[in-house]
Structures are given as structure tokens and as C-alpha cells.
Amino acid sequence: MKNIVILISGTGSNMAAIVKTAQREKWAVNCGARVAAVISNKAEARGLKFASDHGIVTEVLDHKAYPSREAFDAALAQVIDRYDSPSQPVLVVLAGFMRILTPGFVSRYAGRLVNIHPSLLPAFAGLHTHQRAMDAGCQVTGATVHLVTAELDHGPILAQAVVPVLPGDTADTLGARVLAQEHLIYPQAIAKLLQRM
Ligand code: NHR
Ligand code: GAR
Image 1 (tube, helix red, strand yellow):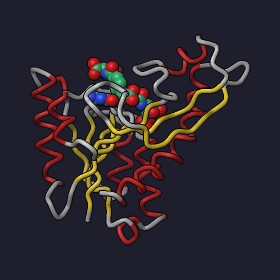
Image 2 (tube, helix red, strand yellow):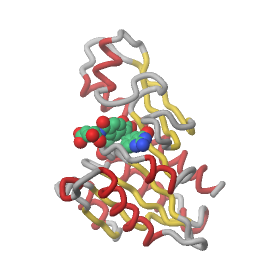
Image 3 (cartoon, rainbow, N blue to C red):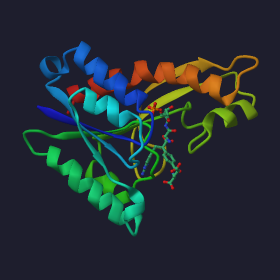
Image 4 (spheres, rainbow, N blue to C red):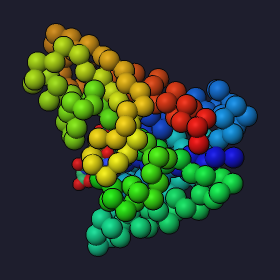
């Protein structure tokens, strides 16, 4: 069985979409995979309740409790590695996880560390993507699932969804339209990746 470990920082709606798809599509049977744990760097992340309500182990690792990014990432890797072995390899899924990861962490999980970013990469890497897309006059934007590499939001692209920018949009209305597409493409991209793990 492959173990999926999902990292969140907030609402966790992408995490919830992955958990629901895994149940609906019987990933345990069809992909040999299960969502083993959800880890948040914020104790107040709303997604933690959804995860524990669905019988998933949850863990909080507050980055502020560590003296450096390297120390936080080492502690994070230690927790993740409980779910990693040759017979049960781990897939690490960033779902609204808001801490930049160190090169050491990224190389440890190379090829099995994925992120969803709310823009059509390579456009608008980094934060505040919806406001930046509107400010640039974009007529479309979207979301990108990509493998994580040491360079922020630059890894190989696994899936994208295109979303129109509509008259009168705010960052919030546009973000909600993008998020609905994220919930469709992220579980799908993960299922595909599991097949080649
Ligand atoms: N780490 C690496 N090495 N590479 C990537 O591509 C990563 C990553 C960690 C997270 C998600 C990413 C996004 O999709 C992600 C991709 C956080 C920040 C950020 O600036 C930027 C991009 C992403 C996530 N974080 C601040 C930091 O100092 C904190 C911001 C906050 O806490 O609100 O880490 O957009
Ligand atoms: C999503 O739109 C995701 O793409 C984005 O944050 C939202 C999280 O929502 N991620 C980033 O901006 C990463 N820096 P969720 O917590 O409900 O899944």
C-alpha cells in the first residue's frame, strides 16, 4: 500500500477533495493507496477537523517552534518518514501548504512531492496570484499541479485547468472559481502519479 501524506496550512478543501475522491474511487483497491496522515504547520487549520472526522491521523508541527527552516523541515521529514518504507512508499502532497521547503527536504522526496498552485505556471509563481492575474489584465488564469523542485513553483507540470477572468471579478470570486477546478484536477493528477510510483 502506498501512503499519501497531505500537508496543509488552512482550510484544506483540496485535501478534502482528495480524501473524498480516494473513497469514491476506491483508491485502496484501484491504486493501492490510502491517505495515511494530514499534517498542518498551523494548529488552527480548519482542515484538521475534516481529516480526523474521516479517520485520518492528524499532526500539527508549528514552524514557529523551530529555530530555522532546516530544523522545521527535518522534524517534518521525521514525521513523514513514519509512513515511508520500500514496501509502503510515501507520496507527499502539498495542499494549501504555505511554507517554502528547503532543498534538502525537496531532494529527499524527489519525484514524490507534488503541489497545486493557483495560477497557470510559469505565470505568477509565488503569492497573491489572483490579484496579480487581474492586475495584469489576464483574460484567463487557472491552476497547476506540479512536482516540487528546489526552485519555487517551477517543477515539471502534471496537470492544468484554465479558468476565465470575468468582468467584476475580485480576487475572492476569481479564487473561488479557480478552487472549484483545483478540486477536480488535483485528485486526478495524484491518481495518475500513484500509477507510476
Ligand atoms: N517549496 C519548494 N521548495 N518548492 C515549491 O515549489 C514549493 C515549496 C513550498 C510550498 C506551495 C507554494 C504555492 O503553491 C509550495 C511550493 C508558500 C510560499 C511562501 O512564500 C510561496 C509559494 C508556495 C507556498 N511562503 C512564506 C514562507 O516564508 C510564508 C507565507 C505565509 O505563511 O503566509 O515560507 O504557492
Ligand atoms: C488553493 O487555492 C491552493 O492552490 C492555494 O491555496 C488554496 C488552498 O486552499 N495554494 C497556495 O497558494 C500555495 N501557496 P485549500 O486549503 O482549501 O486547499
